[in-house]
Image 1 (tube, rainbow, N blue to C red):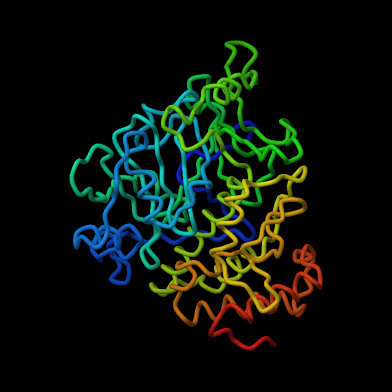
Image 2 (image 1 turned 180 degrees about the vertical axis):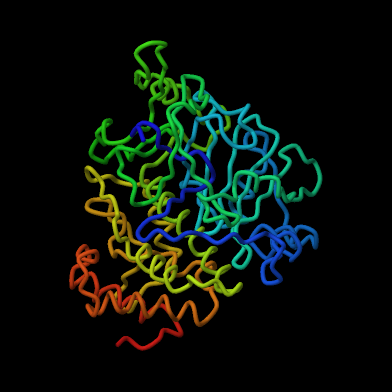
Length: 414
């Protein structure tokens, strides 16, 4: 795979890592424990739709961004989580280009896609039991708007890249100067294990002005490719990025010009976690035979086994870092799994904040208990495998203490 062929192009990021587990085929409605298309959804957007129908909540439309800001507020999504993808991908690809990128905003269970001038907002919302559910919202609705479920999105969003469950897709493509995908250059998937040198082609990447400059050769963002008829692909300048930064995006319907590298790094990590949690949930409910192996895979991922570390220290947007930190509980010493590092690794304490997500809490009790026990085997030092060498004794002790102070129903640490 050419390194220039990797990038995120969907509303999420996912890639298998660690032990390779062949996914059994689970149909959407064929198993009584699943019934994706039949059971009522309980995700955040479904609950918001119910509140709108009861007039318990309203959405306000403004002339510049439509319902975007009101939707973000209603779903608890920080506007400073913004990242920008300029590849022509997604259901409204015709509106997307380096001149008019798609802005994505996210939290632990929801991703919102917004393109100025496009007729709809796009929302992917994780149902704790059913997996990711897809919706659109009419940006021109004059009366009480409603989110419309779009199961047609599953034609792409249920695949090997998502463990064959409804999930966050992250196919990788390089693009030309207009944002068109160049399939002849291949495709791949991305998560926190993917080297930074293979990430973010087809995306804009910015950093806080006070951060050390991130080496432009350290990632694939901000550039396009042209294919020469005889010599093959040629990487061209980052002219599209220069034009973007000079185009006054705030005057054209964008909340800001930022596509924060800190936000991108968090996004890469958590979207794969969402798919992995869904797959484990489904397998445990349907009696699959490989649940134990999937438990180990999830425990490894939550403890950042194989994480690709930053090339240089980067600084996230302060508002994004503060929003993530504020959503996570603190232990009696004031420590949190929501604290970013971004010097030597993604998180200050290398245990995923996704242990607090609705998707994790929705795991069947015996399975959740098994995940905890596996994590405790690693953190207590009982498992001395080299694959856990990135966890120092102080890291392990801190993570255990944070979990004990902030999580209820933990099994005993042995």
